[in-house]
Image (cartoon, rainbow, N blue to C red; front, side):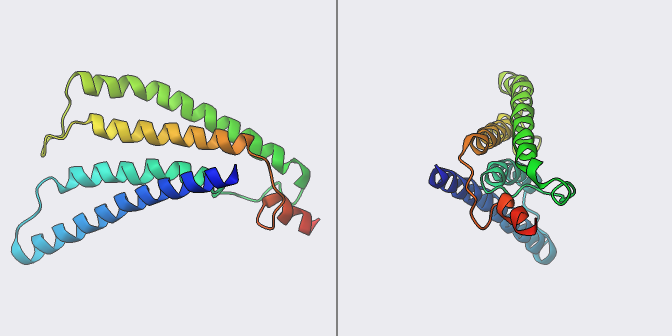
Length: 167
C-alpha cells in the first residue's frame, strides 16, 4: 500500500516540477528578450498563471502522500498519545474540505466551459485552468483519504516513533 502512495506521490511531484520549470523558463526568456531585445513574449502572464495552478494544485496530493504537511508541535510534547487521533481528524477535515471545494468549483468550471471563457491575450480556454484546479483538488482529497486508511507503521520517520523516543 505504501508503494502505491510513493508512486502516486512521485508522479504528482514530477508533473508539478515540470510546471515549475516551465514557469522558470518562460520568466527568464521573457526577461532576457525584454531587456536585451525589447521584445517581450506575448501571453507569458497567462501561461505562467496556468502553470502556477498546475504546480500548486498538483503538488497538493504529493504533500499529503509524503505526510509533509506543515506541522506545529504544540500538543505533541504535552499529550503525545492523542497525536495519531489528531492526525486522523485533520485528514478527515482535509478530505471534507476538498470534497466541498471540488463540488463548489465544478459549477464555476462548467460555466467557464459552457460560455467559452477565454484569456484576454492568447485566447486560451479558461476551462483548462479549472481542469487543473479540479484534478489537483480531487487528487488531494483522494491522497488524504488514502493516508487516512493506510496502515500506520512505526518506522523511524513516523511521528509516533519520534514522540515515543521523547516520552
